[in-house]
Length: 64
Image 1 (cartoon, rainbow, N blue to C red):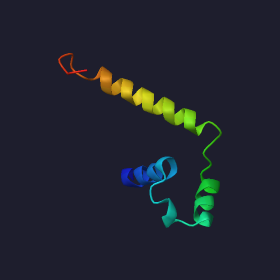
Image 2: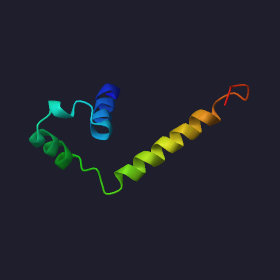
Image 3: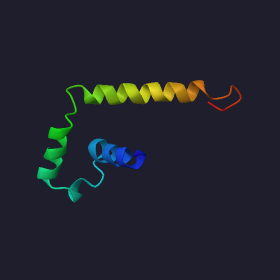
Image 4: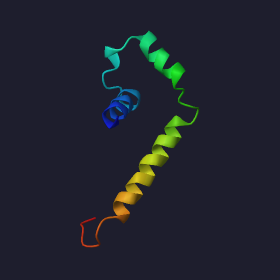
C-alpha cells in the first residue's frame, strides 16, 4: 500500500512516469479521487508538520 501511495504522489506532485499514462487514464483517476481546491496548501502544510516532527525527535547532540 505504501508503495502505491508513493507512486501516486510521485506522479501527481512530481510528474514521475506521467507519459506512461494516457490523458483518459489520468482523468479517470482524478474524477474518482478529486484533489480538492487547496491540495497544494495541504501538501505544504503536511510536509512542514512532518519536518517539525523530525526535528523535534532529534537528540540535542545532533548537528543542525
